[in-house]
Amino acid sequence: MGIQIMKELKKKTEALTAEENLELIAHLVAKIRMAQAGSGQHRKWNEIYGVAPYPLAGEDAQSWVTRTRRESDDHREQQWK
Image 1: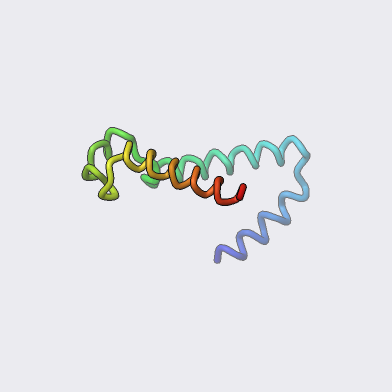
Image 2: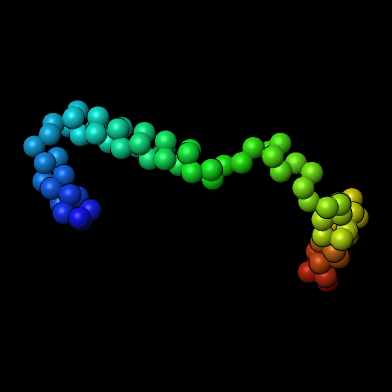
């Protein structure tokens, strides 16, 4: 049923002016945005804040930064040699 309606709408839009087509597009975009907003896809930060255990990956954040920087420095030194 949706395909038939879509074909009919496409035919009818050919008779519209450019301005009317833009108005229709704006309407459809607004409708889609409203549907997405109501779908619960976006979560607020305060809903998930503090949910992950510390340390998340079993390693302190500063230790991870220090280790990855050291590994990166070692890798660059290997490339220079």
